[in-house]
Amino acid sequence: MMPYFWSDLIVKENGVEKLTQSLGRELLSLVQKEANSIWKPFYWKQLPLVWLGKNEILRERLLEFISDYSTLSSREEKLKHFKTCFFASPRNELFAILKFIFLLEKLPFLKNAPVFIIDSSVREASKHFIVGNSEREILKTVKKLEKEGASGNFDILGEEVLNEVKADANLKEYLSLLKITNVEVSLKPSALNYNLVRLRDVFRAGHCGVTIDIEQYNSRDLIFEMFKKVLDEDEFKDNKQAGIAFQTYLKDWEDSLIELLNWVKRRKSPIKIRLVKGAYWDSEVNNALKEGRPIPVFTKKRQTDLAFERACQLLMENHNIVRIAVASHNVRSVAKAMALANVLNIPKEEIEFQVLYGMGHPLMKGIVKMGYSVKVYVPVGELITGMSFLVRRIIENTSQGSFVFQSFGSKASVEELLKNPVEEV
Ligand SMILES: Cc1cc2nc3c(=O)[nH]c(=O)nc-3n(C[C@H](O)[C@H](O)[C@H](O)COP(=O)(O)OP(=O)(O)OC[C@H]3O[C@@H](n4cnc5c(N)ncnc54)[C@H](O)[C@@H]3O)c2cc1C
Image (cartoon, rainbow, N blue to C red; front, side, top):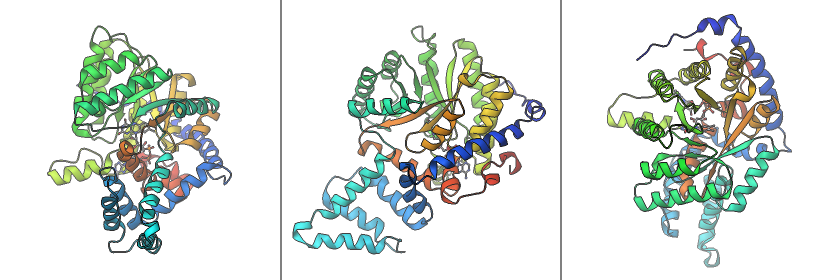
């Protein structure tokens, strides 16, 4: 592996940190103005999540409830699961209200009321993060984003498919989505059951770009191999619209990113790299501990943040062969990317920022106001198939260490929010 020498001099001599601070303050004030306005829907949608983040017992119970909810179909199963999660001791903060809802069950004409209330509440919560899969809803979202100066990147929900029939159904949904409108899509290879034939079909149809999501660590290498194999084939070797996500919470991120860049150099056509921190932190840690193997991810949040900034620098220094998409809701991480691009003379239109639908709306508006392009990752699908996605978003919004919670929930100071991660690592 070729070693990579950090051009720390570039960073120090050009005052990147100073620029990061001033861009960060500008962006933070735009974001806070948007997010703290009681006249904007985001404020009201974020309130329950902030509250949940402050109530640890209820948060745990809710996550346990939602994780298994999609496997239940009968009324009896749902009620039993609900009672197991929410009525166990110690009592959660909503115990009295939830008990009251269950009293309705005793009245014959309101027998179905508790299940109805549970189903509707889960459905409403999911609408915050997921768009319905009808053509009308997708086109409405495309138009709405365009009106706000952004664009969309659509993902069909339904990961970890373990059978061919479901994988074929997912492929069909991708192909129909690509027929509805010319949009960029994101794809989880597990939704296609890691099948190369299906992957080629999506690349063939995705003229506006297909970005491959990275999932759990145990499938990471397989996904990179599949991606490289297809893009090295004659049919796709000149495809410049393909992209792949890259996670910086993995301890081996540096070797793995250099290997990816070396492959891009050999291939000669550029690709897009979507830089992310990684969405599976809790399960990566828990699974490794359970299986008695080394934990593959950093265990201090600031280590992941620092790796993100360094990876960002590495990608920008190679921007002749990769197009970078910076995907983060962390104003500090975004401001650092803006500062690096500025110092490395990369024009604004050559970097892209990405946010998740429902989570990053105020940030999207702020970045657009500062003259950069923003793509919103829009998950499309039905509630049942979107449960794992919903769980990851609830974790992110309610974790004490996450930027979103620190800025909206615990209202950390500007200095704390923009702190250089290098100081703590
Ligand atoms: C458009 C878009 C696309 C995405 N696509 C993918 C994808 O394909 N694959 C994927 O895995 N994720 C993906 N994500 C999610 C992403 O990886 C992060 O989970 C999410 O964006 C939160 O990171 P942040 O920078 O926004 O927030 P921050 O609050 O700054 O960071 C939170 C992140 O820090 C890390 N972290 C938390 N606690 C610790 C700890 N104790 N030690 C070390 N690290 C910790 C975790 O990665 C956590 O998600 C995507 C995000 C966006 C916006």
